[in-house]
Each structure stands twice: as structure tokens, then as C-alpha cells.
Image (cartoon, rainbow, N blue to C red; front, side, top):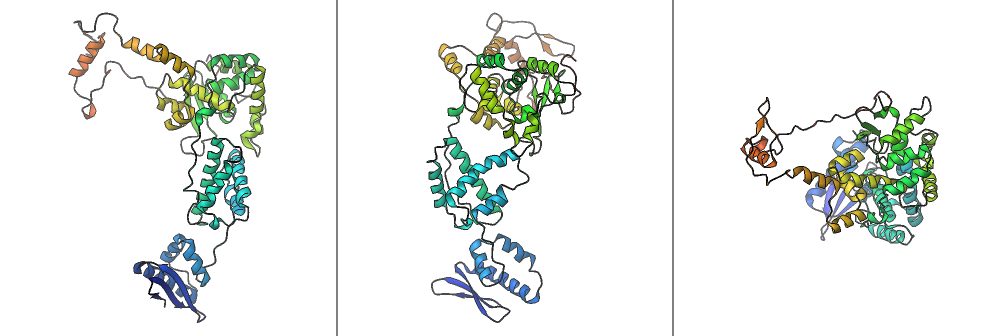
Length: 457
């Protein structure tokens, strides 16, 4: 049997005799009586299991899985449990981070960089349990001296926090020492560039047909390059319905995000038609060649070598290479679309959350400043106001409102529409729905597996 002893200063201990007849003590420190009694009961269960050779009770087994490292160490000292393995940083990063089968090769390649930073600063033999929040603050300060961009520092600190979170989930540490480290906010706008259509035309003038298609898919289709651009097949394009089902290797591990459907944009269609006419017999992918084959190697999409070739093309076109070459093509397209469509629609087409769209993709261009200063309206806003403006008069004239065979009013002025809506009974929930005179068009969603037909049907 185990018993509880309390010192005069409130320190509690659990006393017991093990199977060999030796007296053992587990020091609990200052804790309430109820907690001490709960621990004591589990100690008795473990003692009983040791004597009889039976497995410990499920409740005690569950308690051991959740117990803190300090108490588990004390239980190990008195022989009630096996001593916990002292995992060191280098071994953890190798076995728990860089050897995950569920992570894509390109991601593992990116993770190599923060792993190298961690082992360089702390040392590969640093026990995980000895890393403190203060150590992590010093690691952050050290990163800031490495001539890295602010966005890179933020990303690597975020990775480090994620890695140690994995260690906590595996019960290798009790708390994540990076959880209290403040990650600097990266200045996203500093690396954003709006690539206008004049620049794109200069690139088209210098590019091969294959590269015209790659640039068009990224700039006018908003596809991620290289992963989505190289994964697109002809069967994914529905020429008649004007839809493209975009396979997304980046998000395919998430439920419902293996692909997304986007419009076959009018700006993009001519370049896809050109690519279709020039495609080799039996070519299944829109972008031919061996680019996709290179992406299946250990380095993943990094091995496609598109970035180097694209940089040379930009220089030959007489342009200054911009940061994040392909990302800013996609960002420029998203900025244009946000001028015409609601943010939730654009985010759906681009394959990310609306918050991500506004934070990482939407740009403020010189045209926005110039248009605001001159009082000019954007094309979509001007067209909307023109459509809402009556052709003549003040909208208050008395006109007869006709009806069709279903008794629905037609040919009404904006004033009459408003008046009729006010007379209509409230909709669901007591909310009147403006614009009830016009039916709402319904769009269907395309799916992978369309039959491959020519652009003209």
C-alpha cells in the first residue's frame, strides 16, 4: 500500500514499499490533498500490476499517457514506469519531421532550411526538454542577423513552432517553447508586383508556344505554377461550357480540395486553342515535354527548372525580373478579377480562403490611385451605375406596368420596381428581396473527366 505524507511546509510525498522490500518516495511538491490522493491511487494500481504481472488498469494507463514529464521522470526513478527516452533535436527532426510519408517532396525540401537553422543554432545533440522559451527568443534574434528577408524569418519561425508542436503531440516535451515567441509580421506588399498586360505582351513576343501557354495559364487563368500548370490535362477543359477543372496538387490532401472549377476566361482561351492545335498526337497534358517527369523526382516541383528559364525570358524581353516570378502573375490576375467579381467568388476560383486572397494576393496598383484622383470609375462600377440610371426623367413618372402570362410585371422603371417590391409580401424571414422581377441564372459545376473535344466542338 502507498501512503501520503505532508511536511510542515506543505510539501507532499507518496511513500510505498516495492516488490523487493525497498522503501521508495515520490516527491510531489506542493499540491492539494485531492490531487495527491489521485496520484496515490494510480501508484497503488501500478504496484499491484508489478507484483502480479498483470497489465495496469485502463484508467491508470490513460493517466500515464497524459502525465507531465516531471512526474513521469519521478515514477521512472522509483521503477514504476520505464525511463522516458531523452530525444535530442537532431534525431527528432530526422525521425519525426523530415521522414513523414504524408508530406510532399517539395514541402520536405522547404523544411530542410529551418531544420538546418535549428541544428546550427542549438546543436543536433540538444535534448528537446532542455529548450526553453528564452532559448527560442535567442534563436529568433539569431535568425534576424542572418541577412534573411523578414518574410523568410517569419516563415522559418512558424515552421519551428510547428515542429515543436509535433514534439508536444508525441509527448516528447510538455510545452511548446516556441508558443510564446512573437513571429514578426511579414510585409507582403514589399514583394508584390502588378504585371500589366504590356509586359505580358512583350513576354509573348519573345516566348515559344509552350511558354506562351505557361504564362497565359498563370497570368490569365491564375493557376499555380508549376504544380497546377503542369498537371492540367486536355480532358480537364470543357470547351462548350467554358469551364476548366484545375487539379491542385498543393491542396489535394485536404477533403474536397483535390481540384477546383474556374471559367475558361476569354483572355485565356486563344492561347489554349493555339496549344491544342500545336499539341503532339497522343499528348494528354496541356504543357508537353518532360517538365512533369522532372517534377516526380525527389526534389518535386523544384526540379522542373521553370523559374530559371522564365527569368531568362523576362530579361530577353527587356524587363526587370520581379520578386516571386510566378506568384505575382497569379496575384495580378486575382487583383483584376477582384475589380469585377465578389471576393468569395474570386477566392473560390483561385483555390484559397477569402482572407488569404485579401492578405496575400490583392494588390493596390497605380491605376487605383490615378482613378481615385481623377474621379474616374472602374469599368464594372461605371457599367453598374449606367444600368441603374433611368434613360430619362426622374423615375417618378406614372407609367403603366405590363404583365406577362404568369402575372409578373415587366418593362418597369427602377422607381416602379422599388414600388412593386414594397407592395410584395415579405420573403422568408420577413426580408424583402429586391430585384424579384429578374430570374437568377444558375451555373453548373464542371467535373474531371470531360471528353476531349476540339475548341470548336
